[in-house]
Image 1 (cartoon, rainbow, N blue to C red):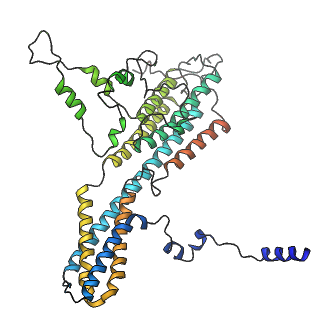
Image 2: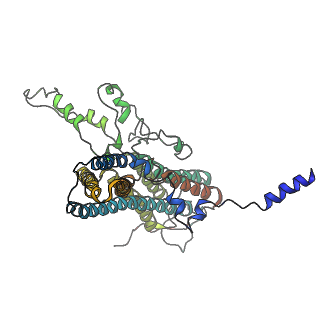
Length: 426
């Protein structure tokens, strides 16, 4: 028994470790050459199979003595055009993919900087007496340290929530009703998507925005801010509503109609990331008004506002990518040219290669259609496809960083005495 266990131990000791694919790639292309998962094969299998079947029919007709030969002067002309179009198509698609990555990285950088500035520089003014040798005024704040920390945590949560909101917005998902917002959006945040704001102390109003439109939902679709990133959009609902309006002004003739603003206002929308950006700007303004930004002064406030503005700018750039696809005629013409080339290829090769035309045409079809398939796969990088940008990972990593900042990193201390209010400068 002991000898048997020792033999098993010896075999296990000398058993060679399994070489992982990622290490083998350093020395050989073979793992990627034989790889199907993650490749473009599944996307182009149908078109390639169609070309292969056509090449088989051509080879069969040739074997039966049919004249199916085409002159060789046609294929070179098509090959130059197809090559140029494929290169431009692939380059344009990767430019869109890379620009989307750069824009989201810029948002991440802005959120990191803004969060750090809020966590460190937003501080209570000093509580001791104002020194006589210090010029300027010392602001007073009724906030306690715990209350200020709570507000700063909410501001940091809004920073993280902005990235989550941009992610959902680019995926045509509007509003805060998604699971990953849990623990990100502040609990005291008014759900503007459902109720909206009034100008009275920021409380929600039953007569505002979406709540007032619930009675008309039977005739109109609910407002959706993601219409801004759709490839095609129009205002047919508003136009038809204006055309069918029968309200008139009593003091005028029946040919004059009033403009009904209220139904239009009920249908207005705003992307959820812009709502969060508005809340961030509002918090920065309140910090300044309450004298909590005196350590950085007006320049610091301008820097924070500039970071929020840059976040909105990057979101708009990604919105531009989402609602500006590559023109459909361009993609259609490319597929037509590639198809024409591949269907003409077996007719020019069958007389010289015979049945060998079938595998050769299949390989050429796999190459050309694979390039176009890759371009089509990466031109819209914000979705859920396996090869799209991992926006969920980016957002989760940023959330982890902000939570670490809140739990582990120290806040800034008290502010300084005195600030220049600009009086007496003239």
